[in-house]
Every structure is written in C-alpha cells, then in structure tokens.
Amino acid sequence: MNHQLLDPDLQHWLDLVGIFVFAISGALLAVRKNFDVFGMAVLAEVTGLGGGLFRDVVIGAVPPAAFTDAGYFHAPLIATVLVFFLHPHVERINKAVNVFDAAGLGLFCVVGTVKAHEYGLGLFASAVLGLATAAGGGVLRDVLANEVPSLLRWDRDLYAVPAIVGATVTALLLDAGALDATTMTLAAALAFAVRLLAMRFGWRAPRAWHRRSQVEDAEPTT
Image (cartoon, rainbow, N blue to C red; front, top):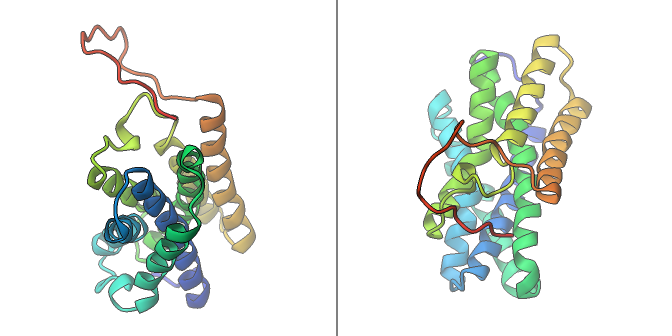
C-alpha cells in the first residue's frame, strides 16, 4: 500500500457521509416501492455499502471496513429511521432519491479513486474503481427493487458520466500532486453538479449509431 493520501480519520468520516447519503436514497426508493421497514433497511444497507465493499475486495483491503467498524452498518440504519418518519410527500420522493443519490455519487467517486490509488493501483485503474465505488451500490439497489439500473438505461439522465468526470479529475489531481481536502471537495462537487445538471436538462448518452431496433423505447421516468 502506498503512503496514505488522506488522514485515516478524515477517510473514515468521508466514508460515513457517503454511506449515509447513499443509504437515504436507498431507503427513499424503498418507500416509493411501498416496502416495509425491513425492506427499507436492506435497500439502505446495500446502497450505502455495496460499492465500497466491491472496491475493498478488489484492492485487497480485507476484511472490508464495513465488517470491522460498526459505524458503517449503523449509518444506513440511522438513515432508515430518518426516512421512515420524515420521508417527503409521495410526489416528491423520486426527486429526493435522485438528489441524495447524486450527492453519494459525487463523494464516492472521489473517495474510491483515492483509496484505490493508496493501495497501489495506477491512475486509470483507480479511476475505474472510483466509478465502481460510486455506482455499485445504486446498481444493487435498483436490481433489488426490480428496476433496470439507472447506469444501463438510455432513458435516464447521465449517471455514469458524472462519476467518470469526478474520478478522472481526482486521478489528474493525483498525477499532478495537487490533491488535498479542498481539491477533493471541488472534484466531488463537480461530479454532483454534472449529475444535477443532467437531471435538470435531460442530458443523456447517445445510443447505437443508426439504431434500427424494433423494441419499443421504455417510458422515461422522473
């Protein structure tokens, strides 16, 4: 493992914040799907921890932090309790899901890239794992909720691209030796802003050139 770029305490708190905001998006989706409180907790845990668990297993950071620090499991449970009692009105839940998901996406793509680099991965591989850290929990959340993951749907606003932007900027900062708390925050904010702008203006990735599929397009959801 390379020299740690982040103070361990700061890394711990950034992980907890990212887990918490992602867990809120999972619990809110469970409310929209009319799950009970157990289903809310499951989606919250999976959304908050899924990407980080995948990253830690790949880089050899075992046992993963989620299994050595009870706080990693407690954060999604706290998010579940908050959502259980304080969730928005039904018509506003989907918007809240997307905003919290965007916040988690921005934070985790940066933290995931940094941690992968600390464990000796190159800049490109670190950025890829930053993307996986950011998107992995959301993919698992959507699969468990019986939805096609947003990452794969053309009719959903850009999802992977904001995480790629944040992870790439983080990798470039690492390469330039300019990564610190301020630039990390700016990289996470950039990914968050790109995701919010994509939702606001309906930005989508292009489909196959000269696509001639006879399969009907899915109805966009908002």
